[in-house]
Image (cartoon, rainbow, N blue to C red):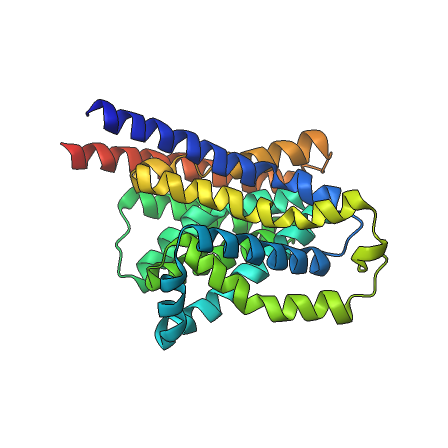
Length: 299
């Protein structure tokens, strides 16, 4: 590896750590907006992300990509679907964090890589290796024990995992860069978000003119909280192999888990403990299989 390639890889690692760390500590930001309803927070997230992404598209001179995508009926059909999926995922996550279900959100993002493998098998014709099958089976047993043994369905975790899994699957089919794709997705959601904030929301925090300055700044910061980790992730993805990038994805849910248990004192009940144990076991096997397969490829 040349010195230039080594430096590029180091930069990629730093950007990956930054992206997943920001995603992992994002609940602290949403907890600070605990007095604002989840739909209001979602609407502000869409609105301010749209304006920030519009600036980034302008300075990166990517308007041509945006115009070409808007003209493509096939791409726009996919992006309409991904807009619904990412909007749903954001809303569930915001609600989970502010309703003391952060452990469930953490579990959802732990399950997500395994869901991605299953979706790849079902919709992209990808084949699962033996250890991958074992990992997926182990995760399914963990969820089944929670449902059958304790009578509690991890609805939040499964909703987050599947919505983000299908989002990733459809975005893969569009083959569009993250910045342009997210800009068009926020553009699609913008009218509904604006209508909700301006005409429907009637909570004490709905009127920006009567809000304290610090609350308004927090709401506007939703654009940065959404866009900055995505840009870091995109930068990392262009510098690192996908297999290398995959090992950083557990930083986010691990930080969420630690925040939930230590800072916000969420109850780590027996059903959750057993499910997490199975999921963690599945991820160890899944990661070992990835390392083993990567080494085999190199040979």
